[in-house]
Length: 389
Ligand SMILES: Cc1ncc(COP(=O)(O)O)c(C=O)c1O
Image 1 (tube, rainbow, N blue to C red):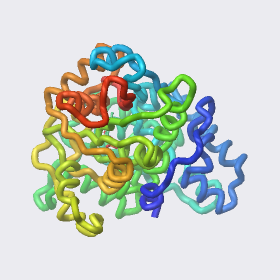
Image 2 (image 1 turned 45 degrees about the horizontal axis):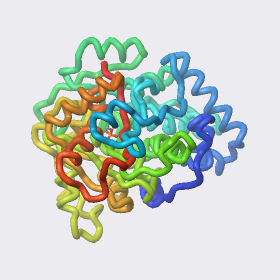
Image 3 (image 1 turned 60 degrees about the vertical axis):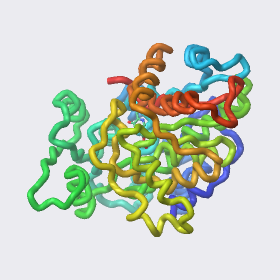
Image 4 (image 1 turned 180 degrees about the vertical axis):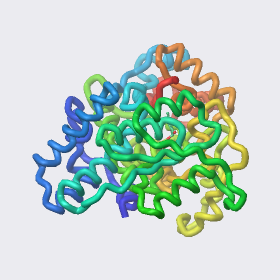
């Protein structure tokens, strides 16, 4: 239900960028609509957002804020943009947990706390996530803030250092070796699904596992929509280049920005199940009904951008809608451009990971061939989505 709503939504009036992302967008958020329908007042919802945000801040040192959106002179100059065009960076590296992931998870947490306060959740089910990256860190941070127990299912190869960080946040870590009788697929994901089948709440950034993660992710897009038309902004954007792993980020940005900004979904050549799927979906009347044929796992994913190596693009339908509705495209970036984009982003002063700068690799790819609709005076956006660890 939510996914359908998210996919068809049109941009609403710009938000106030001086406000709080989750307070400002209360009237657009699904968790808030549900809580309101069940009797939670505007003041009570705002108090809940602020209380949880304060708790997050006390754990992470930062809370949810409108993140910067500025023209990057180094990247713009190096890529040959003129003064009236340029590359605009939405900088999520200073976000909770160092990436955009907590935005997606915050609306799940708000929903759970609202249900608790309204008396609909007498006992706390455990939270569960399968991840050993930014999503796990964000999930463990929010769980600690809410004092909610969480199980994190991780692959056997997760580094001890990362395990220590999750441990220090109080998460219960489960290393997941492949079992002899396991079906194909990621064993951590299999164990996660077993936990959910046993009553845990999927606290995850994959829409098909928990559609409420697609709620909060949209705040990034609403912010860009407002910052774009701010006096300090470009006024309009000719494209936004977004790195795609599981696809929730691009689906949310596309939904929030609507038709106004062409969505360029970027994957690495070493893992491009979305691009392959979108080609398979061409001419198919109802792609959702052909899921098993269109979205198949990528064999042996590999790239320096290791956070977007999801072998399946879980939220591919949302990305497909965004690309189609906005007249955007799917871009496969060469590994050389993934590396070059990271180096360029670092040169510009951004403390961003290769995953977090992978959208810029899509722009490099486009620039290497003459592209209709782009010239030196174009204004384009990228999302620097995660800090270098
Ligand atoms: C820093 C960063 N950027 C982008 C992504 C991709 O987001 P999504 O999986 O929603 O496509 C990830 C996913 O792990 C990430 O860690």
